[in-house]
Amino acid sequence: MTPTKNYMYKSWWKVLSVVLLIYTVVAGLLIKVPDLPALEETIRNLFFHVCMWFGMMILFTVSVINSIRYLRTFNLRYDIYARHYATVGIVMGLLGYATGAVWMSYTWADPNNPATASFSTIAREPKLIGAAIALLIYFAYLVLRDSINDMDKRARISAVYNIFAYAMLFPSIWIVPRILPSLHPGGSEGNPAMNFKDIDSNMRLVFYPAVIGWTLLGVWIATLKIRLSLLKEKQMIQ
Amino acid sequence: MSSARHILTLFKKELLLEIRQQYSFYGILLYIGATIYVLFMTMDEPEAQVWNGLFWVIQLFICINAVAKSFLQESRGRMLYFYSIVSPGNFVLSKLLFNSALMLIMSLLSLAMFMLFLGNPIQRALPFTGLVLLGGWSLSLIFTFLAAIAARAQQNAAIMAVLGFPLIIPQLLLLSQLANATFNPVLPFHGSTIALLIALDAMVIILAVILFPFLWKD
Image (cartoon, rainbow over all chains, first blue to last red; front, side, top):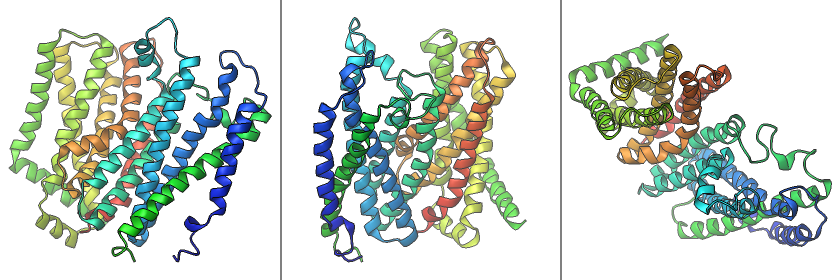
């Protein structure tokens, strides 16, 4: 792949990302939202919290696709792609937790209990378990990958683990939350942000651009890290 | 059916190795005995929920210990020899088969030990035994494949735990939820959850067969 053909080096989607994010923040704080009990104005966190998880899953998916491409071609470039998309996915996951923690402290946490007592009940949420599994898997992926010195072996073994773990992750993220009881919206009836009955049409106008904007930002960060690694490993990669 | 014959031959070889080097088999037995005895010493008869939780966690650790050696014991030279005579799919299938059988025996033994030392909260014995076998099988499948990864990374069993714990959480959740129903006859027993567990096991086998060829090339 020559640099001129690679989307990594194009700038239009980076501009798009910035524009969409400015729109998300401005419109997200200004539009009229439905006044729901318990949620009230905190519903605006949808444009930040849910987008982090969407971004995380998309980046992890891209990482797995690159692992598959590595196993098909044995081109080390794809191994570097897979690693950095996974890292940025982890960062988005942690941000998802952070925004979720802020949100739940206004909606779920019982103000009469001390924070630690609320925590143990909230941490049992199936959605949180699913997210924790995803993050633990990718932490383990990084530990495994960095524990091997030989470059080709490292790429091959971590790609195998990435594919295996991702295939196991999906049942846990999509099925287990639908079996266990949950406070979190979207238990048995699918993802609430994608459900046309639940989400206000005004909010959808902001939500979809927000998902695209945040994901593009994640991809942008990942491509910067990838470009740095590609420069460092220049001799190794064909 | 030459591939079935290959798998059977490799299975016999595993069995023969196990019989010749009995220390590893007895090592796992001792591990089960010692762990459950320590539990017995540190607590009286636990209530059903605690019993259930402890049981599945101990199963997890037994599985890691029983399965870890399956690939770690193979020397470089022996792997090269296998590489030249069998297909990777047959090789990994024979390992999966052998470890499943090993883990089924170990699961039953640890169940018996648990009932003996920590009391018996089980109301429906037969379904619970079935669950233990299914759980032992699920655990052994996942950890066999992770043992292959850990062995190729030249790592010890500790990395197996790091790699495997996040993957096994959903299965353990489903298993302990199903097991709770066997403690209390009022709770419903979900057949669909069992089907889901079996589907996950089938997926692990398929993934192992697809991905193992990439692991064992050097």
